[in-house]
Length: 147
Image (cartoon, rainbow, N blue to C red; front, top):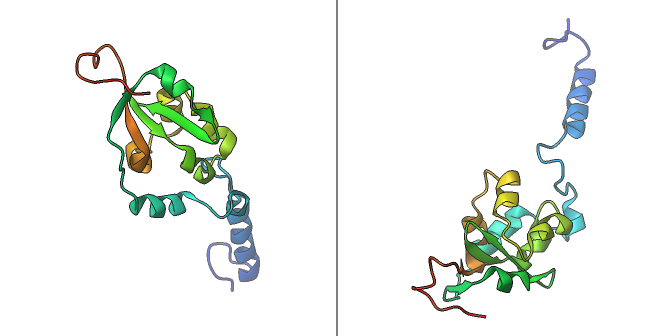
C-alpha cells in the first residue's frame, strides 16, 4: 500500500515534487535568478544596508533637465512620484539587473516603476537616497532651485 494521493512509490513522488520546485517559473521572470552574478547582492542585502543609513541631505528642488544629466551607472538619478532619487548605489542590488534599472536613469520613471512594481514602496526602498523634489511651476514660489 502506497502513501499519499498517488498510492505509488514515495521516492518517485518526492522526486517529482523536487522537480516541480526547480522548474516552476518565477512570478518575476526578468529578475536575476543567480545572486552570485550580482556579487551576492540581493534585495534582502539592500534592505539591511538602508536600515543602517540616514538621509543626511537637505532636500532640494531639481528640474527635469537637471535630473536628465545623471543617466550613467556611475551617477544615476530618477524621478518617481515627483521625488528625485540618486539610485546609483542601488544598481547592483536590483533583481532585474543593471540594464533593467538603468531604463529609468535621468528620466521621470514613475509610469515605468508603477507598471512593474505596483507592490513596491519606492520611498521606503530608496529613502536614504532621496535628493529632493521635482521643481515645477507649483513650487516656483516656495523653493529655490539647486544645481
